[in-house]
Amino acid sequence: MLQLVTLDKIRVFVATEHTADQRKTLAAVRSLARGGATVTVGSDGGICQPALSRYCRRRVTYPSPVDNVEHFVTFLTKFLSHERHDVLLPLSDYTTLALASHRESFLRVTRFPIADQPGLTVAYDKLETLMAAERLGMVIPHTDCPADEAEVEQISASIQYPCVFKLRSGAGGVGLHFPRDAGELMAAYRAERPRDALFLAKQPLIQEHISGPVHDVCALFNRGRVRAAMTQQRIAMYPAAGGVGICVHTTDQPELLDQAVNLLESLEWHGPAMVEFRLDKRDGLFKLMEINARYWGTLDVAIQAGIDFPTLACRMALDGDVAPTFNYAKGMEYRWLMHCDWRHALESNHRWRTAWRWYRPVRGRKSELWCSDPVPHLAEVFLAVRRACRGAR
Image (tube, rainbow, N blue to C red; front, side):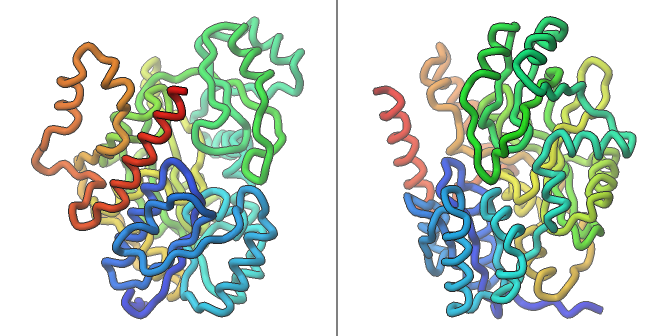
C-alpha cells in the first residue's frame, strides 16, 4: 500500500508567468497551502495575483520563460539547488515547456509531474493531436493545413463560413479567428503571428466551425495510467465565441471520459491535461478539438468538486503513485464572478438585469471569491480597470 506524504511536510514551488488570467495558479496556491504545504510562487514580474494571496509564503521573481528560456532555467535551477523545494509545479504553458526541454537539469534539484517531450510535442501540435485521435477512431472536425497563401485561396473558395482559423501550435485565443467570408480568412492568414517556444512557426489550420457547447475532460496521469479524471461543460465563455470558461457545470460523461483516457494512454501521458471536445448540434457527435497539456484555467472547479489535482500531483511526484480518484460532485455550478464581460454588461440595454443574473446568490453555486483572501481580487479589479483605461485611449 502506498504511503502518501502529508502536505505539511513538503515545500512546493509553483511556477507561472505574468498573464491576464491567473485564476488556476491562485486556486492551486490556496489548495496546497490549506492542505499544509509551504508554497512559493515564482513569476516573471508585474502584479502576480497568486503571490498576493495570504496562502503564498514567498514570492520569487525570475527571468521570463517567454523571452529567454535559458536564463529562466539557469536562474530557477540555481535557486532550487540552494532553496530546497520538494515539488515544482509548472502552471503555465511556457514553464511546462521549459521544464520538459530541460528535464534532467531540474530533476537534479527537485521533482515534478509533467509529460515527457514526445507526448508534449503531439499535444502542443493541434494537427498531430487530431491525427492521433483519428487513428483511434475518434471523430474530429474537418481540418485543412495549407502550405502557403495560394492554398489558402483555394480553400477559401470551397469551404463553408463561418470557419475557424487557428494557429497549429499555441494556447488561448491568440491567433484565433472566425472568418465570415473569404476576405476575412485571407486577412487572418496575412496577419502577423507570434513565433516563440509555444507558438511555433508552423502552418496555421483552417477548420470547420462547430457551434455546439464545449465539454472538457480534466485528468491526471501517471506514466500512461489515469489516476484522476472528471468531466465538465462550459456554460459561458469569455470571449463567448470560444474562450476560457467563466461559468462551468460538472457533468457525468463516461463516453467522453473513455475517449480522452484512450487518447492520453496512447501518448503514455504523465501529469495533468485537459482534453477539449465540442458537441456538434448537426449530428449529435462529440468532436475532439485539442489537448491542453498543463493545468487548465478552470482548475478550481475540480478542486471545489472534490478532486484536488495539485495535491494529487504533488503526492504522485513524491510517492511515485496515488490511488485512483474519480468521485466528485456532479451537477455543481461554478462561476468566475471577476471574469464577467463588464463592457458587454455596460453596453447592454438591460445592464442591471444582466448584472443581477450574473451575481445574484444561488444556493450551492461556487465561485473564486474568498472573503478570507481578498487581496488577489482587489488586484484583479485594479488590473481590469487599468486595461480598460488603456483600451479607451
